[in-house]
Length: 337
Image 1 (cartoon, rainbow, N blue to C red):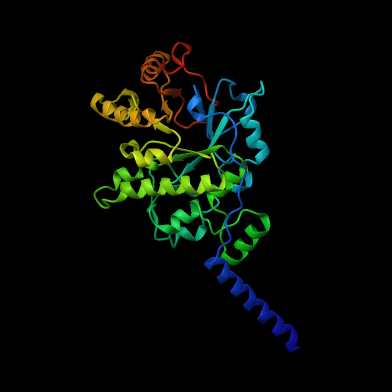
Image 2: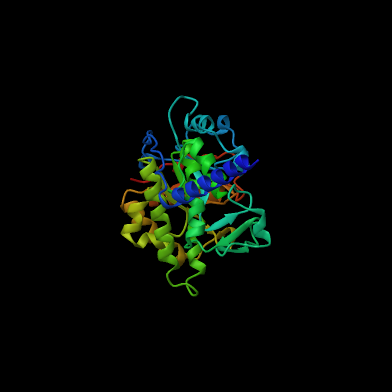
């Protein structure tokens, strides 16, 4: 009777030793094939839809498409490589760039990394729920424990090692690795502007976010050369050329309208200062994707003309981003030279 018990004890010891070795000397993530396809700098139009995605409803004219990595945000309904490939292929056969939405300045309770126990015992990095967006929570994004949920070189990409890691460490594969392995062309990073409300309590919050984005970019490009990183908002970071070098484009919400309510024009001095920062990206060859949440066609036409003159790429949509993207007014879809 002692032999089975001894075997179990030895097996437990081996597993514990393996777990320790795996944590100390993690194997490198497997290299993925370099990204191929259109250059993002050549884009003339873009779309942004986070729910109800159907490839057949995306207009062929859309050059860059931003979607969630999943049909409903959960890992169970995540887009497969075949799904992503269908979004990357227009009906006429031409390729398009498809970026996965990824929030790095807030945690979302419907993501694979979320644990039920956090409602009673939240981790040190988890903050209050966003009153405007149920299920979204502030994070101390500079803390390693949060960043490891987004990207972590300690977790390999092959299925066997992935299961082994989850068994030993109780961890899910990091969010960025899921996106990389699904075949997306890049990521569209949301809540990059989280540093803006933290300047008083944490003076280094801005530098922390720049470093976080740089780390995401370096890791993703090391696994898949040519992978694209496009942050949304947080344009104050564009004052640093080193930050601009780490990204491949930039998104901006509510540049001309919407800061005081949808359809309301923004304060001109604020708009001018934001345009000056966005021009830093444009001057470095990074396209600027602007979304305005405007319903009135007259305002859309005016905004499209103004953005076209700036050389920015306009999009108009509802703030919930539930509908297939529509092209801006034809008269001003192309950026000025």
